[in-house]
Structure formats: structure tokens, C-alpha cells
Amino acid sequence: MLPKDLNFFEHVYEVVRKIPYGRVCSYGLIARYLGSPQSARMVGWAMNASHLKDDIPAHRVVNRLGLLTGKQHFEGTNLMQQLLENEGIEIKENQIVNFDKFLWDPSDHLPV
DNA sequence: CCCGTGACGGGGG
DNA sequence: CCCCCCGCCACGG
Image (cartoon, rainbow, N blue to C red; front, side, top):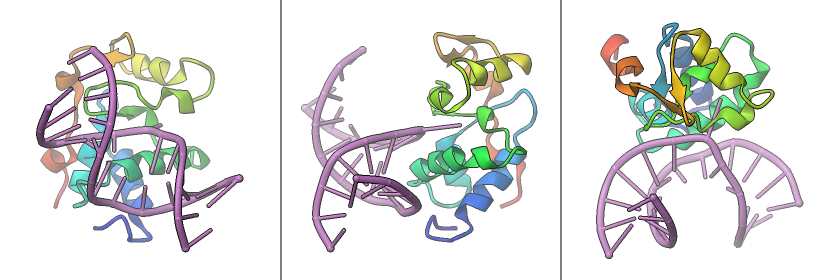
């Protein structure tokens, strides 16, 4: 799957929809799972466009260090953090505490 | 058409 | 910790 594929965004959305409640994933892992490891930016772009759809848990996508780099794109000043905290994820200084415990890698749970 | 700008990530200094 | 460069590519000016 290449980002040139017109359905790249849709494939990203399919993966994001499968991130379990209370877990998070990174842009890079999603790109890697889709066979386009260099296209993490496009995953971010897909999230940017995802606000049109209401069935995509975009708050569960963070950067590779567990930082809430996308929070500016959510309403208000703290919606992304609040949504994650509602799912039992602790955040300190914009960073998910015990990130490795919550990280969900699609390659470990979804078919190739 | 070129160019700057990114919800990114890896590499190097 | 800081910085820069590169690959990636959609979008707007």
C-alpha cells in the first residue's frame, strides 16, 4: 500500500478505527503497517482530515514518543487529553505516562 | 510551476 | 538537551 493510492486515507481510517479503547498507536506504526514506513506525515494528514468523520478515534494516535502532538487540532485547549484520560490513560506534560504499556501495534494484532 | 508548511520519523552532529 | 537534513506528499499561495 503506497500513499499514492487514492484509498490511503481510508486504509488509515480503518486501522485507527480498530485501535482498542484505552490504547494508543503512533503515526509511524500505522504507516509501517500499511507498508509505507516513510509516510507517517501522511497519516498525520489523514488525521487532520478526519474531523469530517465522527467515527474515528483520532485522539488515540500520538507520536512515536507518546507526545500529544495533535492536540492543537482538537476543540478547546485540552480535548485530546481529556478523551484519553477518560479512557484511563494518564498524561503528564503532554506525554503519556507508561506509554509502552498502552501502545498498540497494528502489526501485532491485525492480519497482514 | 515553484515553494513553504506541516498531527512524522530516522539519522547525524 | 539542542540543531539540521532527508524522505514522504497534500495543499494553498
